[in-house]
Length: 123
Image 1: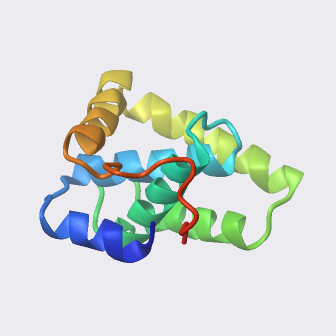
Image 2: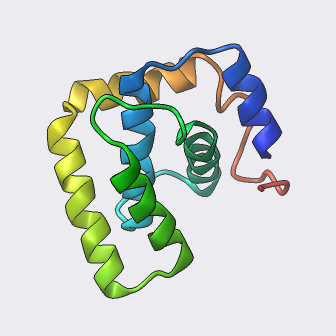
């Protein structure tokens, strides 16, 4: 698994502004430690976020991206709490069905195809 896999997938799959918001929200959930995805799925989602964070979302923009960058650079209890608060806020702005539809679309469209928890080439 590497960024090229995600980049290749993105070349064939247009994401909406709402999808960008969903990717941002998933990244917040990964960072606050509440994400229940496996390691490979988390890596794929982080790579997806990195590939699309420059694209405009409907609701979330530079403030969220700066916060995510700061949390990735230096994790602390205070930062995790702030990320948690922003994630909860983001999840209230996006409906649960929107997030479920986004995640289902990624699976159905093959973003995770052929990847397993045994994949040793995680980027």
